[in-house]
Length: 107
Image (cartoon, rainbow, N blue to C red; front, side, top):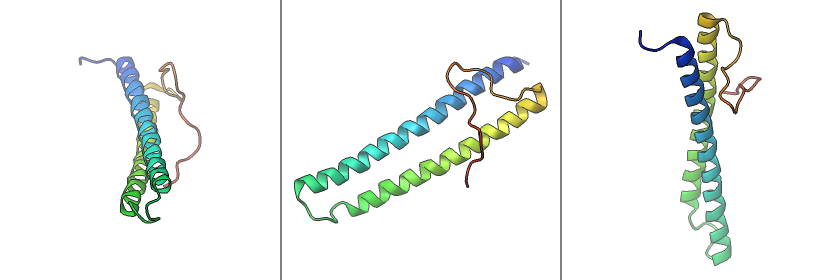
């Protein structure tokens, strides 16, 4: 055995936090892109449906990220269950920044 349970807990907590932050960042960037496309369309005076297909695809990619976030939250919960089973702990090990979100995640 090359990794101890406390080391595994800390690594998983750090990587989970990084993955959650990355999803948030991607959503922010996509939202900014969506806004920029609409603003460019309006301010350049092109027709109201120019780049409509691109907007639909950006929206679809945002939906996919939201679904990915739901799955990541479920994975987080599953890992907490594993932690409780093996360590008896009721919350994430500290990562210096985040505590687990309370409440359920919508499907």
